Image (cartoon, rainbow, N blue to C red; front, side, top):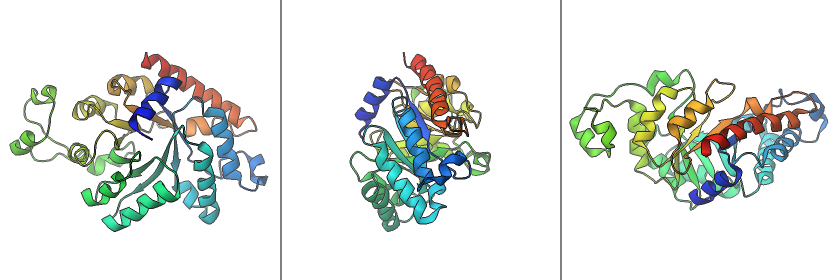
Length: 288
């Protein structure tokens, strides 16, 4: 999916909602367990109930890999059932030496019809470049995550360096504040941004880090951000939207548990639709 196609979807649906299909077989309604493929039956119902309200689905592959072959089959059926219109994200957090990343890219972009894959930048440029070779496909790179442990490394302050300040394309607003005391995640964002473009690179920025969003948007004015952590993890949609949206919207806000587990009863799909509708209506107001 191209950036323009994604923008058109956002405008058409008045939504930048991404529904996370983090489907845990121990949490789906009990009546589905008699189905031949309970996970796919659950996902199918959620997709049918929310497809007109969201622009993307994010499949967290760990919940499928844990089920072995049956889980992979459920994931394959799910991503194909979603179809071509929504943006399909494999949340797999891959990243390895170049020839291994080549195989990961083939797995998710050729064997499976995903539009995007989350990747970790720790191993550097050669571990990410293979995901950027596919037209219409995206690498979504971990930037600043929403988990508590993100403080262990991502916010470490780097030594001030005037040459780096000159090298990086800082905005006037940032430059006017004086020397740029860089943190590790900010260096990751700016360096990785130079390996691709806003047409094939997104960044994961956790919704539980609202104080960082204004600065991050100044650093990367054009890129899309995938924002997990709204809903069950406590992120506030209004605050994130106000600090982060650009002229093309520029964000995909993911909600998983708050939507897909809105009910554990037979009305689970209906309740999921109600939860998604509430989010979509709020998003529509911010898009105006």
